[in-house]
Image (cartoon, rainbow, N blue to C red):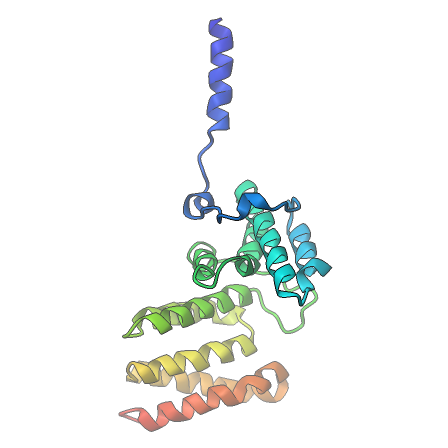
Length: 237
């Protein structure tokens, strides 16, 4: 009997394994158990589900249902394969469509806070670099924080930290979007010498690169407009 009791205890301990960080921070939406969702266990399976016909419906009700199916598939996949960073980051990047507008930023923040080091695949993408996914999600988080807070210190910190540590891993077209928004934050906050010098350096760098970089060229005007305002408002030009 003691032997049997020990076996039962061992299986009980195994069955009560500790939750990973995602499971600790995310709860299942109220609709979660009311829908069926396919099992996805790899990056490729998540990608295939995202690209499937189910995710391209123009009917609002069908689109909502399919978005929730994708969310549930990813939720379970992250819970079961948290060690698979590529799968987890892809899911966190895309699964927010299954949440209400007030909760979507939760997945973005979790990605930025826990996977800021991640390098995305650039296979098949000529205008991509390994830091683009994290960069775009950091920009999204900064824009969210920027709408909520004044002064804009946290949003500025997020973007400056990203650029200081990973700018060489971020595509120029993504950089242009980040610097355009960062410049707006400077205008709303304070334009000191360090911030002015940062914008001058990137302005010079963009102008050297944009003749041979079409994605940057298409986004350059928005950045330049912000840059010109910074020059006009800077106390020591």
